[in-house]
Image (cartoon, rainbow, N blue to C red; front, side):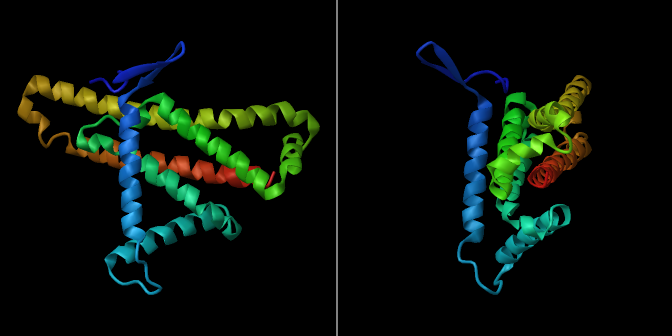
Length: 227
């Protein structure tokens, strides 16, 4: 089944709502990540006991160091959001490893992630500086910059989503072309030969795109909060 083909369509009044494979896949990813997070963080001890807690503390420390390096220690309260975004995007980018098209190659999915970051950034800034100072920031450094500042804010989810969508789509397209070419040579050629491609386009590129999305979210969160 094509990844964009609707599995089921239902109607609310005259509005048609499609349930597509991407939605089901995302729900499965959310469930698996949630179960893994619950299992890995239950029964934590003040002193690490066992490899599980050591791994959990290593991941959290890495996130904390990332936030400290890019935003500063006073922004550590964003660690849960940053960690959640990373834990959600990464497995969706790596789905090609198990023969499933990455859901982030669908622009509606990438745009939704961009909008989530956009609203989180604006909400965090309002929480930090207050509603009044937040709107005053649109006139900084000069009042005539107001239109440009508004456009800059509006374009944030577009740039975030297009970057993620474009890179994942291109990587998936290249891998598919290679498989089609190898199939014309011999079906056995598809076994083993594409492994380096998956290592680069799925693992490396998928991880890099997650890191870029997270880094841009953090940078914009800090910039908007300090405007």
